[in-house]
Length: 156
Image: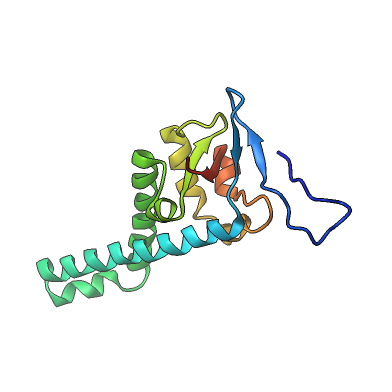
């Protein structure tokens, strides 16, 4: 990886952080702000999915079904849905709705689509407390990226 910061002018914006993929392809990692934007979009999309499922549950089982979602059971269901959301989208597209909207994609170390094992690992690594903060910084590679040996780059 390289981060081309001009030592003569520390106030100049740094150049894009890149890494060398196989076949001499150089891929550009996306910024922490773009990662934050995709995270926010995905959180909203995930909540929309949850709300639709809760509404369907109420329609099928009645008003008393809302009590099932209270407390620990509701939190557990929310975590499971979040993991399914990320695994589902990234297995099929290597992108979530947030990544589609902001033009990013998940790749492996060679610049190819990640394996199912990498996607599942990424998704479960997101459960680590404070993990979203690991994407903040100039290299914007979160724990769920480094643990699964994946990168989030600009989609071409």
